[in-house]
Length: 217
Image (cartoon, rainbow, N blue to C red; front, side):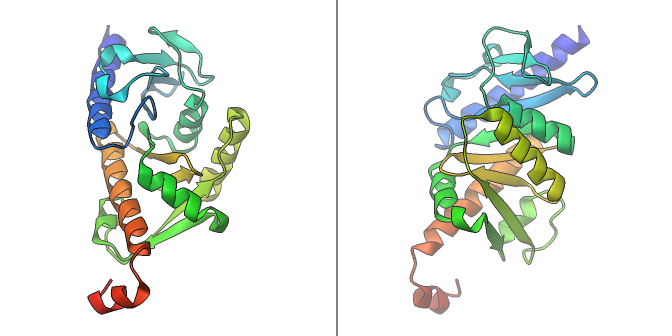
């Protein structure tokens, strides 16, 4: 009964977060997926069932799956990208993983893909990322090439996270943002911070350099 109650509580929390993201234009259509950890041993995650309108999520929109993305309970099936959630939880011990598809992440990931990522620094909002204490922090947001082969893509995600354990998120090229946290609310905050920063970076790139210098940008 305790496990069922935990599943229901996490599903309801994720549903509320997802509806909020939809209202902000970050998971339109059926895009995006959200998960939270129920247990580590054995690994059990509550995750959105695939193909759902994120503006209409409720607790019934979620299923329970294992580390192989097999459904343990619930109605529906996980997104193929569920293996990326598993990789993040396994490597970092994250309590929640959130994936959005905003216009800003799509634009930014395409524009900076050749560099392998985008460096973000000097913004006060960086202090919203866990462990960051100053606006002078430099955040590296890697960009991985997207793929429909999830086993291969999850292996690249695993390697990235093993090499850079200081990361707070990453982008899939022309796709969207993945970020995480110890709790659903921490992961939600990270989405909000990254979405703000990505919008600022994209908008700032459209301002001529001389004009930015005159305004202190």
